[in-house]
Length: 238
Length: 362
Image 1 (cartoon, one colour):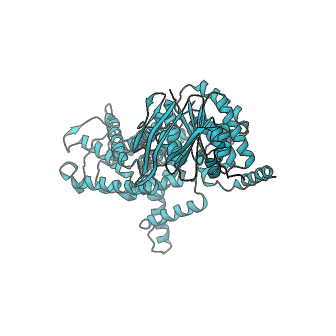
Image 2: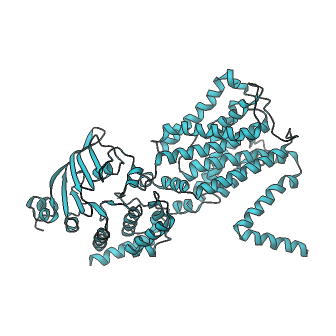
Image 3: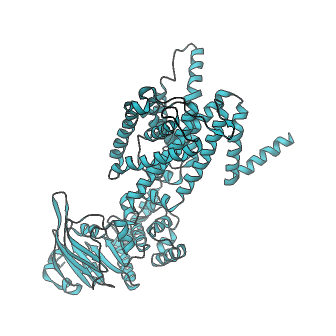
C-alpha cells in the first residue's frame, strides 16, 4: 500500500480550475518528483495535500487514512511536513526559534533537542547561524532553514516546494545533496521542481504535470530519456 | 550623606538584575500615593491603573498575535456593563465584587470569541475595519437596549467593593491598591502567556500566518484565544473602573477610547509588557495633568490656547513623531525592533550572497 495516494484530485480557485485531474502515489521510502511548467498546478497539488486548500473533488489518503478534508494542523500531526513555496521562514525569529516552531506539534523536550541537533548536523551552516534572525540570512540559508524546520515535525512524508528556486548553482548542488541525505535517513519525499534534470536525478519516479493534469509518469530514468519530456522540460539537446 | 550614598548604590544594584527591577517597581508603585499625599493624584493613579489593564489586554491581541483591533473599547464596555448589571439596583442583583471580577472577565472573554469568530478569515486592513465596526455597534447596542441598560443615562449607584467590614467608599486609595493587585496579576498572566506554547503560536501567526499553519498551528483556535484573553483583561478593567466611578454609560466607550488604548501601545512599544505600561501611564498623565496644566500655563502667558480641546491633535502629532523617529516605541520588544530596523543591516548579507553567487558561477 502506498504511503500517499492521491486520486482524481480537482481543485479550483474561484472559477479557475487549477487541477483538473491529478492522481499520484508515493511509496514509503521513495523520492518522487512532480515536475512541470509555471502554473501547471504543482504548488496547488502540495497545498491540497497539506490541507491548506480544499479540493473540489477527489481523495487523498495518507497511510490508509482519508485526509482529504482534514485541517492542516491535523495533517502535520498525521506525519506530513511541508517546506513551502518561497521558504516562508519567520524572518524576525532566530534559527533556533524557527526550528522550535517546526516542532510545535510535539511535546517531548529532550526529543526536540535531539532533532534540532540532527538538523544542525544535516545543515552545518545553520549551526553557525543558530542565534541569528532568519530574515537576515541569505536565500540558501533560508532554504536550508525551511527544510530543517519541516523536518522538525518528524514527518514520514516531506513535501518540498521548489527548494532550489533562486539559489546559486553551487547552492542548488548542496540542496540536492541534502535531499539525498534526508532520503537516506528514511524520510519519504515528494519533491516539486522546475529544475527537472536535477529532480529526476534524485528521484526514483516522476510525474509531469501539464495544465492541471498528469501528462506523463514513470521511472525517473525513463522520463529523463523520454523525447517528449526532454524537449519540454530538459532544455532539448542543449 | 553617607546614608544617601548607600541608598543610591542599593538602588543601582537593584536596577542591574531583573528581579531587582521588579522589586523596585513594586516598592515605587506602593509608595506612590503616599508620596503624592494628594487625593487628586491618588484618584489619577487608580484611573490610570484601569487603562494599564486595558493596554495589557489589547497588547495580547495586537502586540502578541498581530491582530489589529480598532474596537477594543467594546470589550471594556461589555466588562463594565456586565459588572453594572450584576452589582446595582438596576435588577436588584448584588453579587459580591470579587466574584464579579471573574464573571465579568469571563463574559468579556466569551464576547471576545463571539466577535472574533466572524473576523478569522480577515487580515490587516479588513480586520481593522470590521473591529472598528464592532467598536461602534456595542456602545450603540447598550444605548438602545434602554430597558436593561438605562439607555443614555447608563446604570448608576453601582456597588462598591469591600473587604470584610471595610468598605472602599469614595476614597481612591483602596481602589488604587486593588487595581495595582489586578495589574500585577495581569502582568503575571501576560508574561506567562508570552513564553508559553500559545504565546509562540501567536508570534508565529503575527509573523506569517500561512507559515504558522504549515507548522501545525491551529490558526483558528489560536486567534480566538488571543481575542478571548485580550477581552477578559478588559473585564477586570471594567469592574475596577465602573466600581470606582459608580456609573457606566454608553459614551464612556467610544472610538476615541479604542484609539487612546492603541496609542498607548504604539507609544510604549507594542508587544512589550513594560513598554505598554509606560506608554499607558504617559498618555493618562498627559490627559489628566500635562494638558490642563499646560493650558493654565499658556493662559498665564496671555495665550488663549486650550490644549485639552486639541488633545487628539496632540496625540496625533505624538504618534506621527513616534512613527518617524522611534517606530518600535519607547521600550520596544526585541522582535519589533528587529522588524522595524530590518534592512539597515542587510547590506552585508546581500554582499555576501553576491559573493557566493560569483564564486559559484566562476
